[in-house]
Length: 405
Image (cartoon, rainbow, N blue to C red; front, top):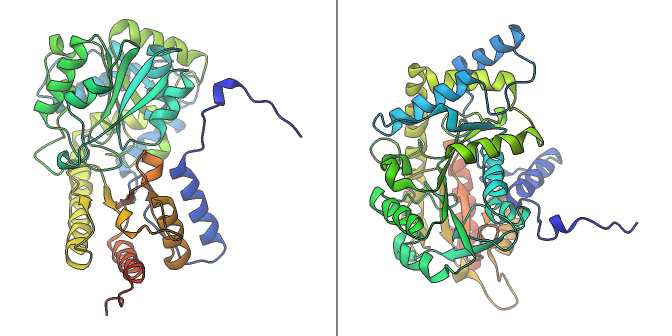
């Protein structure tokens, strides 16, 4: 049957990370031994206090339509939480919109701020959904390649090179998915100043802010004074730091008129986010006892990061990689294994790795650079060790060398 789809979807591609996860589940259901290092979510359980808060909300009948911008208790808890992360600076709860995950917060922001004829700069490599969401807003995503010596981050010079009269904004992520790189406060300030100078919207995705291997949370645009921020929208949520990916709670902090417009848009899309999940998130952002859970999880990720880095340095010394300073991703380069008639892209590398060794990782093609591969270390040390052994064996075969004993 011939089906004519809307032009709104002419650029749309399914999420590669979701597709790989589905293929992994299919193979496991068929009895195959597959280690999944593709997932972009913590492997920890949601802390008990948060889960119990959600259960209580259901038992108390808090299951009706919630306020579209989010229940006041959650917006107030999130405002206080964001304030404390950035030294007590004021954060207005009325400027927060709660959505069904940070992905919807990003969608709402792009649909509100961008449209036909606009160009939106996106540092590359970039999370798979940024360009797709910009396309859905009928705007044009423009990938700005990062510098290898800067851990594939961009600077103002690179952004300015890609700016023109149609450029309306920039989407910046830190800590970065897929590389784990982290922008310093000085780097963020330079980019914020540049965006303000050219009257561009800056969407700062800080969903991984708490998963940082330096001192305290990763640097944030909220570390800067209000008069320096200009036209800035902050994206945040409960999914990563509190292992709440399935609860679907994200939020955006935006200037008052933009927050109001985003809330109005949401009334026609999903209305308010899941009501019991919002009450669970009140506990996540508001109960200081949960800081111990966050610290425990971040320490576990740090140990796993070290495990992966040490394995590559010892067993795969010729493989280039970005040393992660945040998030839970390890980005390594595979184009040295490309050959005519053989593997020619990271996607093919990952397909062969899955077929030959049963290890699921995500090709850099999904993030805008087909020379690299993303490995998630949000997995048990047992799975990590097993997957790294299989990956090393696979690479040794590609090199024509014997596998390590």
